[in-house]
Length: 535
Image (cartoon, rainbow, N blue to C red):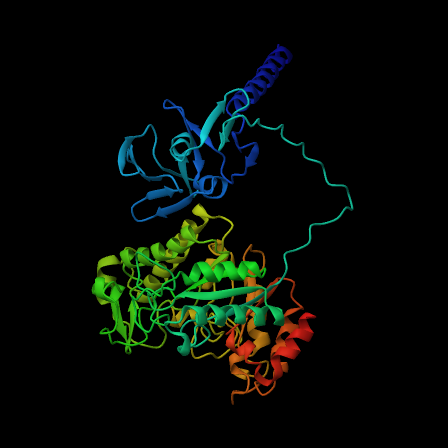
């Protein structure tokens, strides 16, 4: 009797497993594939069908990268604008109407957010962009045609397994970057103000010189003091272009700079100063649409300089919107932030924001400030990768995170300023959480400066990125060559630093501040760099 009962239970168990397997199989429908004129469009988030309304949703990147349309996502309003040469479409999450060329149209399904991606209805968007759509239920494929619809979808090419011991895809070329600043004389020169051709000539000449030294990427300061070197609906023109803030220079410098960099095989990274508003407290020469005039309640005067208050959520969103304006409109390879978060070693009066926006309910003002910056860093990265996942997002913090004297996990340094304590930049959290693609600490000290020795600082950063997916680039300071500071009396110092980095495979390259201190050849640096890079 016991044996029969046991066999019965075993049979029930086996049948249960089989049923569960069938159920699981039924719950996993075939993945939807999208083809444009016969070529498959890749998607990092699988398209899916909304039940009842039978609408297929796809990531926004399919529209921007696959269909080549311009896309603009506003996190603040949760609105997407999609545009090509023929049409402009605007949709807002939660609204069942869209605007197509200023005409209101009803929707079966609007914008959705899924797995950190913005999803849009593919048929509605495609047809309003002039693209024909065909759905194959059996094959679970969407075929998009830009022509007359006669193109046939090819059979997928079967994957070929890699041969054991075969060739390995080579690693990406190491980063050899140069910061090009618009506020310290890198570009344009004071003599080029108002002269478009001279500005273009200076820039292309600089690119040629940098490439000749071995540089393969430029980090161009596109937003310095809440102003821009590109036409913006959110900020005024930078005064370095014409001598007057807000004055149109007569061309789009950013479009020109990206094109010229790419012509030479150089990566172009758009560099933003996030929270700095001005270099002085004077506002008389500021354009009427400068943030300090439009939103004085967002501004804090700290030791004679104006800053956008990171404690105000709307202010943080404004900065993200200005950055996303560039991501959406331009073919940049990266978005780069420097260390202008909270200003260091000054009084920063944010009492009102602390009282109003202290959602942490903490009495620790520094912890609240760090949380403000953390939210900004995380949300900006999400916004960038929702629209263009391949754009590299990184930050160049101050070189010392914390001194060991204040935190036993900090570096063996005695820096008077630290990223965590002075600027409320919790870089460790950004790295551990994977909110950034790379970190490029400004290690602007020599191998012989006891307070912050180059090798000790680099050792610390190497350990910090270990077991993460965050890449490490090192920021170098050729601008110090020839200065009285210890260790900078010969350009061999830079070469010694590069040589030291080679002991760590996790260091993916180097960035130099700034471009003029490479092209001016301080202490014969150019010949040494060319020899080091084998140029």
